[in-house]
Length: 255
Ligand code: MN
Ligand code: MN
Image 1 (cartoon, rainbow, N blue to C red):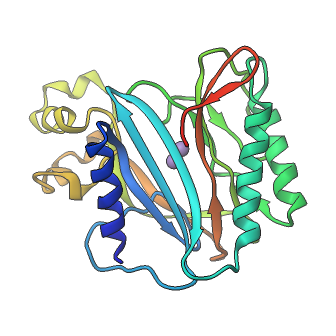
Image 2 (cartoon, rainbow, N blue to C red):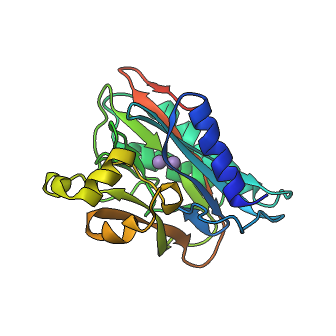
């Protein structure tokens, strides 16, 4: 199958079930960690591919963000996949009001390293707001982040550990996904208004646009999400759930 067939299948199924895609379906293979979405129909899956499927759904701007990693026809990266899942489960168990994001990062790093893998420090989980996939708070995947926040009741967060056997440094590729910067100064511009009417402030991609040429005209209004790639080309796995922080724990809202 082509990547585009799978991405469009996920996005169409989302709409059939009454939601909307909160961002273009991410299909990131091998050393590509995140933010890759197919634009044209040519690239196909191959045996041995380590595939991160990252899907976002929203209903009236309320977002759920989830990811899983699978291998195509092989079983050579099971440790990476399991380490990411176990780290996510470990962090979910620790999540409750009053816990710091640094603690969650530390829990995840411990689990990942115990499996002989490394986390990717530059890739983090995040708080989620209405029409905002990234809403200001970062959830680190390691215990040494230079920032930390205390979680509160009602916080909506996506936790997403990434694992690799490489050094865990990332480099940036060309952006395939963009979103409008929420800036009232731009609201009188017709191109801004037209894009805002279609996608609000949520991430989108050229293949979703009626008129992809508008992307060029909208240059200064856009936040870009470059493709994130493990610097030394080591494969990367990811696991992700979205959850709501409660007094004594959390409610996981993605399956
Ligand atoms: Mn995601
Ligand atoms: Mn996310």
